[in-house]
Structure formats: C-alpha cells, structure tokens
Image (cartoon, rainbow over all chains, first blue to last red; front, side, top):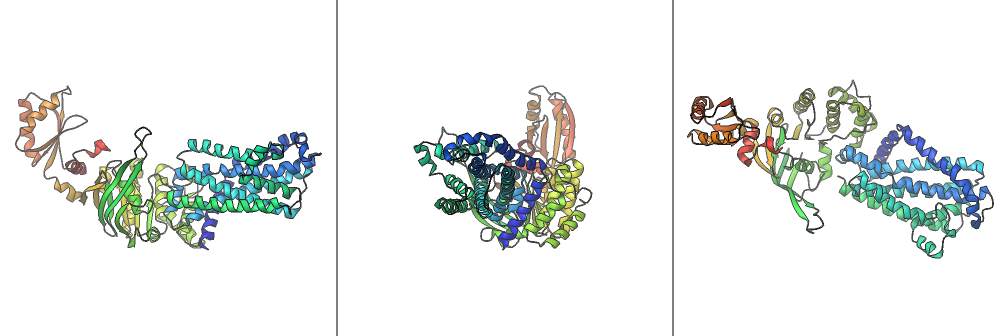
Length: 254
Length: 326
C-alpha cells in the first residue's frame, strides 16, 4: 500500500515535469512520424521475402518492430534524466525521507513507460491510413508487451546511471548495449533475411523474442507459441531488471 | 539528542592501474559526540576534514564502518528508518528541481514524509509564511537567487518538523545579506526547540552562529566546546605585526629577534606576510616589541592587538592555520 502510494507520488511529479517540457513532447511525436513516413516506404521491396506484397503488408511487419525499438531505446536512454536529478541533489533529498526506495525507481520507470506507450498509440493511429490492420485485443496484448519492455529498459538504464559517474561516460555505455540489442532483435528488418549464424545468435537476445511476439500479434496470430514465449521472456527480464536496479537504488545512491 | 562513540568511515580508493593496490582513505577515524537538545552545534574544519562524511552518516545517507550512534533517540545502526523520520537534512547543493515551484516542492516533500495531501498543502502554506517565501514561492525554482534557494532548501528540510536538522555548509557561496538571513532562520528554528547541526569552514560562522563547536581535522575531533571556552584555552593575546619592508629575509630577521623575547609564547610567520605573536599581555608588550624590532633595524608597518580567534585554537591543536588549509 505504501509502495503504491509512494510510487504514485514520484510518478505524479515526474509526469508534471514532463508536461512542463513541451520540447520533449514535440520531439517524441515527430521522430516516430519521420520513421513511418520516410523509412517505411523503402520497405515494400525489402520485405518481399517476408511475403509482403503491398504497403499494408510491409507496415504489418515494420510497425511492431518500430514500436519495440521505440520502447527499447526510449527506455535505455531515460537514465540520463536520473543523472541530472542525482546532480541536482533531488534523489538525496528523497533518500532522507522514509519514502520507499523501490518507489523512487518505479515512479520514474512508469513515467517513461506511459510516455512511450503514448508514442506507441500515436504511431499505431498514424499507420492505420497506410493500411495497418490489427484486432483490438491483439493490439492490447502488444501494448502490454511494450509497456513491460519500457519498464525493463528504463530500470536497466537507471541502474547504469547509478553505476557510471557522468553523462559523458553514460552515453557510450548505453550505445554499446543498445546497438547489438537492436541489430540482433530484427527490429528494423526481420531476421529471416539474416544468415543462419546471425539468426542463432539472435535467439540468445531476449528482445528478439519480444519482437517476434509483437509481429505475431500484429499479423493476427495471437495463438502462436512465440507470443507466450515472448511474454514470458519479457516478464522474467522485467522482474530481474527491476530487482537489480532497486537494489542499486537502496545501496548505492550517492 | 545525538550521541556517538567511535564513529568511523573509510573509503577504498581505486588506485592507478600501475601500482595495482587499492588504498584506504580514513575519512572519519572515530568521532565521539554529545549534542544536546535545542542547541546549534557546529563542525568546524578545513575541506576534507570529514565533516560532511560525519553529517551524512548521522543522516543515514552513508553507513558507518564502525562505532555506535543514537540520533533523536533512535539507533543509527539498528533503526535508520526511524532516524529518518525524526531528522531533516539539507545537502550543500540543496535539492530543488528547476521546473517546479517552492510550493510544489514543499507539498511533495511533506507527502514523501507520509502526510496526507490536505495536510501537506497546509504544511507547505505554513512553511511559505514562516520562511518568508511568499513573494516567489509560486515561481519555478530555476528563477531563484542563491539566498532564496537556500531558504527553500531549509524549509524543505524541516517541513515534517524534525527534532534534529542537519545542514551541510549552509552559507557557502552566499552574499553577506543572504548569509545573515540564513543565520536568522537557523536561530529561529532553535527557538522553536529544534536541534541544529551545521558543518562549516567559516570561522566567523562557527563563532557567531554555533552554541558549541567541534573542531574537526583529519577525521578526528581535535577540540570541542563553546566558542568562548575554546578561545579562552588560548591564554593571552594575539599581536599581528606587519612589516614595512617586504624584502626577503626581513621577516625572518624580525622573527629571530622576537623569539629571543622572554614574554613571547609562540610566533608564526604568516603566509600573507608579517608575524603572528602569542603572548600574555599584548597591550603591555607592544612597546617592548617595537623597541626590540627597532634595535634590530626592522621597521614595523602595522601593529594590531587581537583576542584569540577559533583559528588560533585550530592552529594550537593542529599546527596549521584553518584559513590556510581551507
């Protein structure tokens, strides 16, 4: 109960700060729109081996990948905001109060999750006129998956922020982690285009399972094994990441 | 209100790759304290003396390596959560968020301490009045001056009416007027019955603000007491002699002559030039000092008679001047 209340407190403050930074919101909306309008048209030919014969088909494959990459990257980069708060002493001020340590983390991660889900919904809406078709129930399940992805990557990012000393050190660390994750999960192009060795390497990437699950949901195959496998992997990873990051929050905050 | 025995903290410092061994830095090497209820207690010492580390340990922000401590009646080791409920802490840099107002910060802080929303809103309103923040309290914190921000920081530290307030270097970087206003706020809190612990490396702050002072150096308390009692320990007077001739060797020659005077207890060459003399009766000694200098062919530029300061106490205990090591 106290955890829920404290998380809500932290979340409210974080949301308020975000709403007061309109630039951030503008960028958050414009970027994915660029991806949809400027990158997606290239895809029809590239995705032909996937069985895409029309723009609508291409979007069906591309949009779930775009949403996943949005949540993975958005989450991984959110630690920078924590570095700012650490520097300003905001975290330390919270730490001398009896507020739950886990709430300090969860409130922030949930803010990031909500922001990313809002973006995801916008992208889905914009993609509809291009011929994207998803059943509402599958879409809902896809958003659950995305929300967990965002929560997980935010938690990982906050953990990294607690371990590195500065912004300058954080950027290369995050980039180095994000790059192979993105390439090995087939978010931009499906891994069916990849050679065998690359595909087997991808099987060790938890995000690959998430992306495969997303694609199955968007193509209307909610019953595919990859859907529950993806969910399972993501739930397990989320629990682990939050646990790891929460421990760092309570022991290591400067 | 606060009692500690043998409070210790050391840090492992990562060594350079070449030497391969980590070195241990003893930040705090066993501090014994007894702070009474309702007093303003100061840690005075140079940067790196261990003041902030001690304060952060008492505020539950770092875990001590050893020793015992009770803060406001709660055991620091066994029940840090209870300590947190009873104390307020203001870090040197404060902790406000630029994008929100003082009022919003006060409400949030009260709620993080567990107050329901309506009570938190009322507490914020009261704090805005008590700390005289009304004029700017609804503007974003980014627009505040250093002094305004500091008053907000302190208001945040006491929003839950703690029994003990810890302030880390509360007036660093403030102009004299803001500084005086922060001192006023701290004294007002004492009259309301709060115990206040401050760290400072300003001699005048320790002297004018604190009821009792612990002089800290290299992780240890080297002297403790009221500023008056500490200064009384340095018996006698201090005479500062400035020299008209700044040529090299002149100060050394003067020192040699003066050291031969039987009534002199101690003599220091000042880094900024001139000499600092400790003796029993300054007023009576000045004519004799001048004669002695004259006899040696040294012309004094200025002569000043002073009561001993806390810096003299520091010097007597550590062999260094606080003003020079700070």
